Image 1 (cartoon, rainbow, N blue to C red):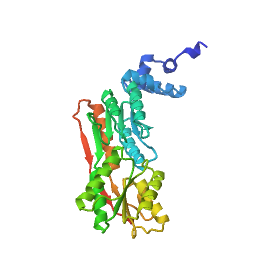
Image 2 (cartoon, one colour):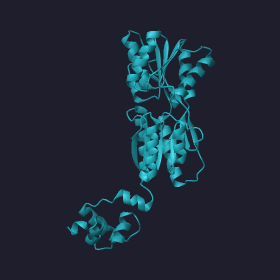
Image 3 (cartoon, helix red, strand yellow):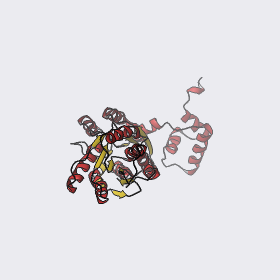
Image 4 (tube, rainbow, N blue to C red):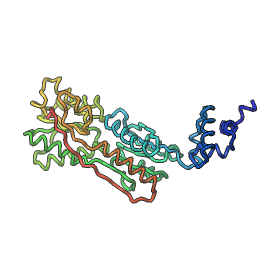
Length: 331
């Protein structure tokens, strides 16, 4: 029983024939002679000793972890962002911790409260909604945060966002150039940041062309299943000659609903999505989509956070990624 009370660190020191202080220096990456380093590492390996990350973080003042919080880890856009952020931060010596917060700002606020207890060194957050409560918690946070998307009013943080208004203009102008005049819109929830921005872009683009307001329907969220219901509701009302969708999942839903009704794509209805994910290219026909630079946004956000971690006093940066249009068979 007495032996069990000995700490594993003490056992490593005993096996290596060095002091506990020497073991601590080696395992924390601090300078030590080559001989001591080799003996400590060999002893630790023989005993299967893994340093306590929590204790080490308290000692060195960092966790070497970065958190990424998104609404839906199943969304292809967020999956792509996660891979890109992980690639960047791993090269810098950090681990990426992923959190799926859903669309409820309360879950994001709870996450911020937890992270303030020292579970990560920094956070990349992509909120769907940005109420005052979230903004207040962001301002109160003690660790570096980068926002992918729009920053809540009154909050000064590094952020990188897409230009959804310009992206929607690319989509609408492309359809108008094809001779489409009845351009409808399948959006996600309009009380979200992307939903509001894309609706604004859609209305602005139609007005600039003098086409007038088209029919709009809003899905309950940005998923394929919600898109099926929204597209069905739209086509029950009318048959437009084009549909713009707020993301590719909604676009595929609209394509499938239209096809099941015997409508030809793009002869009867042209369809354009947003995000330009792999699933747009896999559809039949492949879907024209606005590329909002998800990979660039993710890479930029990761670099902004690493910059902030290295220099907390660095000037605030707000970056806008310009969209492009990938034309495929659906239009």
